[in-house]
Image (cartoon, rainbow, N blue to C red; front, side, top):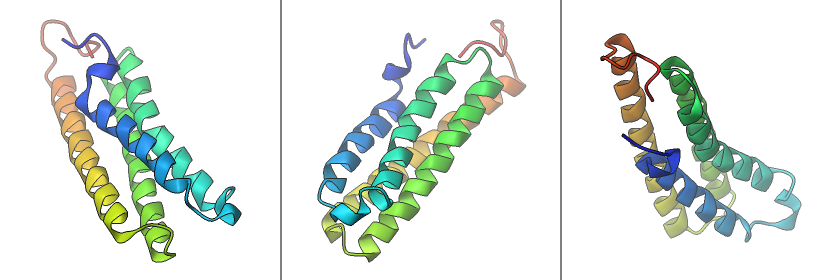
Length: 131
């Protein structure tokens, strides 16, 4: 059993993606500081933050809900990164790499949600509150 959300591979990847997003958005135009740059950073922060928050919840249903919020933020980030690419703010190789990372995290989040949903429907001896 995991002792902390920091041991979740999906949290680790989301955290690393957030750090990378902050690095690449440093090169965005200054006029986007309060526009697209801010939105991208907020969405990126929200992903790992909601995974962590969900892990701390007392029951699986709340955990799953937080993971869906993280998934929504991930989709938001993907859209914003596509816009940034369209506007020429990202190099094609950076865009490709970041979209690949987003896809990897998406698959991991969906898998974790599925596993938790199955566990919630079929609680074991510890019951549905075991994270």
